[in-house]
Length: 166
Image 1 (cartoon, rainbow, N blue to C red):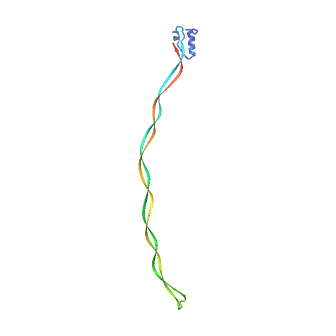
Image 2: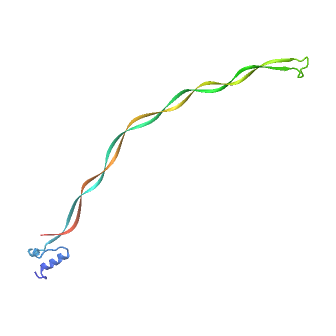
Image 3: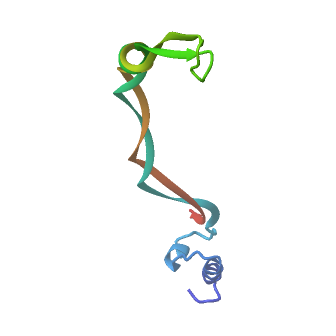
């Protein structure tokens, strides 16, 4: 068809609109123009994505719990101290006059001598102490453990397009 014909003008119009239609398709139309209508083209992609999932895990452990119990401990100890003990008697002479002239009145008195003598003594005492005691307790604890899993996902992109309907 020549460029000035009806088919050439339609081809140029469709080419400016971004749609390319062959000359043979336009020639097959019995004088009617092809209808152009808006359309949507969808593109779909399937892929896997990582995802963190927390799984509960229960752990049972045995703990040793220390404690104390108060107790009284009695004990005896040996100590040495001193005691004043008599060790003998001593005569002490005293006279009324110091010149020993006659008549003089003299007196003899007996005095006891004392000495500090060591002696062993047993003393009883006590001590309050805390006696350690160990007790085993079972403890159950739940933890969330992270785990990486792969899940399927899809992405759909819709784009506008121009369609030609016969």
